[in-house]
Length: 135
Image (cartoon, rainbow, N blue to C red; front, side, top):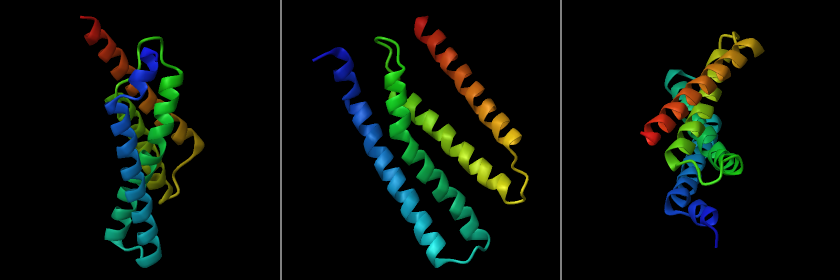
């Protein structure tokens, strides 16, 4: 069995997938219960954003892991923390877009620059992590 296969089935990656399932189920179940059983007053609106954040983050986590493994350089598989952080960025992006849609100010240009800013932050964090690992 290759080193790549051993590392992708490591306890860290298995834990990330288990966490993704728990987070996604909690988020989607919470959203469903909230939408079907409450009126859109102040507190349920805040809960909507919390559940949306959990649902999106947990749902995209396995896809982010898959893409990270596919595009990883030889011997440089991303850690579980990096995969989780990137999934959190996607969840934050979706919640920010939903928040901006309430007053109808979300445009494709705003969504593009919001996504671009989160991507740039992630790139800076990855470069910083790589520099620290080479010291």
